Length: 366
Image 1 (cartoon, rainbow, N blue to C red):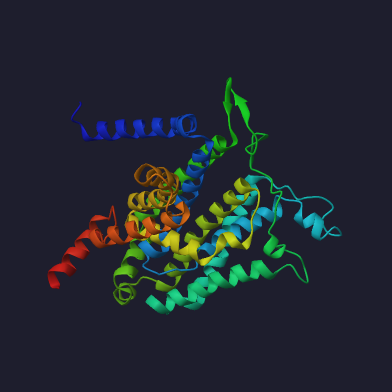
Image 2 (image 1 turned 120 degrees about the vertical axis):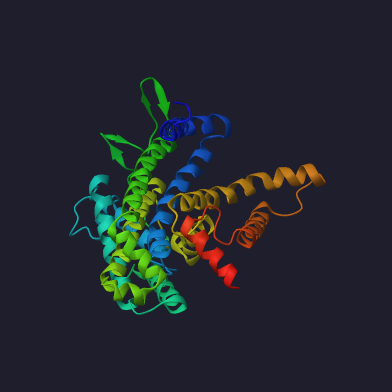
């Protein structure tokens, strides 16, 4: 029946699926493959934001060093999919490892998850600003470590980074080169889009299942009142460590995908600004709400590029010349947009029903 809610929901899913399937071809034909590449990066940010949402949105633990797990996954993929180890340690590696992406990504997720537990263990009794400072320090330690570990053993190649990283290969086909499929030419950025989209949907599915699970409810209980959660029998220590570990796992996967997509990694890609950006995606979209976090990630990944793209033509049309550098104007407009949104939508653009009730209750008390 046309009025059946389940039928409408299924129809909406089908339409969204069709739109996602044709999106890279439509965007590539009208705006060029550079915009498809931007969409690819937006999908990576969606994975990162969903991982951080487990820590910040579900468990209520402020993490300012989340990008460190992204770096761990990226560098692990780079070391196992490039000639760097064979060049730096010829006595140990006779040739480049060239591991399969299906081995490197799970390994990167596991190692990043272990780093997440390593970060969470000494911070179990910290909350708020103190936790933020410790996680900030952890993120900077990882970045500095990567920047300086080129002596006495050249493991990361220091500030020069690692290049010649092998792209992911699926069914013997490298995603780093264009190929023909059923008579249709598939550019590299489009192939990466479908690969990233499949993994993003998997991450979304896992997050939805976690949110509705006993563990997800335990995270929410800790976020609302840790003392009450402990009194109810929740093992807050283990639950917090699981939040750090599972959130870091998604960061490790996204980092491996980033390394294979870029073909190059360096410490500059994993600075504090990246952590702040991912945190803004979670807060702006709506902490603890999966759909809101996805919206926030897509907006903050695409909006700066849209502003950069449109800044020069708009100035040319209004003033007959470019008065302000598009890059500087892009950051200014981006900051103004963030301030306006948080002024008028403090719960985020798409908050969860629970979050809206909490803010309404606080407003009534005030």
